[in-house]
Length: 260
Image 1 (cartoon, rainbow, N blue to C red):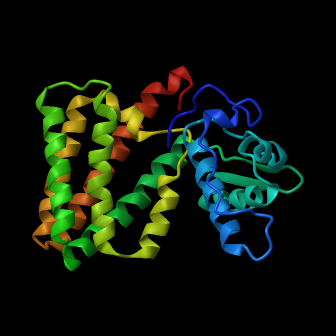
Image 2 (image 1 turned 90 degrees about the horizontal axis):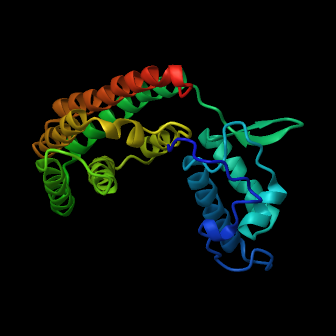
């Protein structure tokens, strides 16, 4: 979900600039089906990250031969990766043209948050009903405490960005882990895999809003721990909805500069 950065083509952004996919064994060896699957998944993860980081531009064609050269693999795992990323919505396939990075307009981006709010709200309710185990509760408390220290300074510095992102991830992932619903996770993954725009970057400028978002995390965690399913769901839905509203303001404000 990162905004587009300076363009790097598959040929010019060499493998040294990106982590190479880990090989689970030779993809050409007979009887090594599991190894092929492992390599294909690694290639998928690598390409997904590259797209999310903006290393490929919207509508840029993704040519199997060039991608295989870049990642130093055969075209078989590349083809599998492109097929998987198409299913996720990051890539689109057009007959006689091939694969390309999907362009996501602002309206579609904003609409995605409606789906996220419903799904993550459901996850929070399920987590509260199931009950979060003590180990995950301890992880969340430690993360929330780290977040409290970040905002106690009264301002944000660039080094805080990744720290706050980690705090945010711990809370949301703990809720979904407790909800223990694989289908919910699969559906949310589609919402998370949004290229071009990034709430993490766009919303970082507003200290007051981020502080309120962190306070939301405290309230959601409290509701889950108290097994208050309806409250946890409402709080999570409102939390994601607030991201949607703030994101819309930022995008609309940037529209004259051609960033919407």
